[in-house]
Length: 261
Image (cartoon, rainbow, N blue to C red; front, side, top):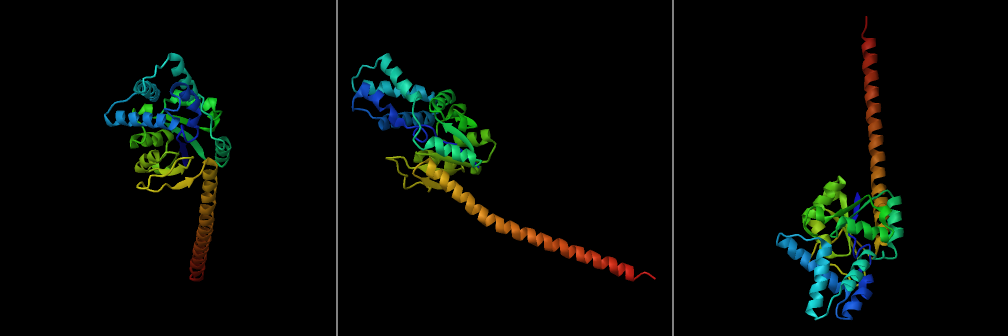
């Protein structure tokens, strides 16, 4: 199984851009509203058959929100937001949990709405780059998550079937798309996040990535406890069948010998 992580808000704490936003908007725009607006317009572009890079949408939303509040947006303020977005810290448990997942033999990847190069810069700044074998961007299919094509692209890039991929996100909408594409899903219940009650239940629900790691380890142990007895029984049955075959062969040989004149 390949574990595929959403990046912003799942591994990286988007609340860290609050100071940069407050320097422009005061208390008139918080980080949750800002990212919700970016998602809203990324989905609008996908639904209308258009595409813009995620960072372009972010800066367009920044301009739109400033214009709506009659706030002058300077180049320096825009640069502060860009720097903050590239320097988001990981949630506290993330680095240790990823280390345990790699040690347990899981393949790890990232699938993000951000451009691949932007995501690599974010991961490098967060000191997470070494944990992932692939950093995948929806830019390669020019459609944003939760379009099912993005998850199918990820599965193909990773050389697996969708059902062999576990999509991990702190956003229920992300998992709805992954589930529709046939992936297994894991919801990380970050503060202030909750599941959409009308969506299919995720395969796993965890408070953070460390708890998800423990659940996956337990699930692997339980599978092993079921498989090993079955394998032992199958091996024993095969041995009995071989032994019975050998006895029959020996009997036929003796009968042939006894029948000689």
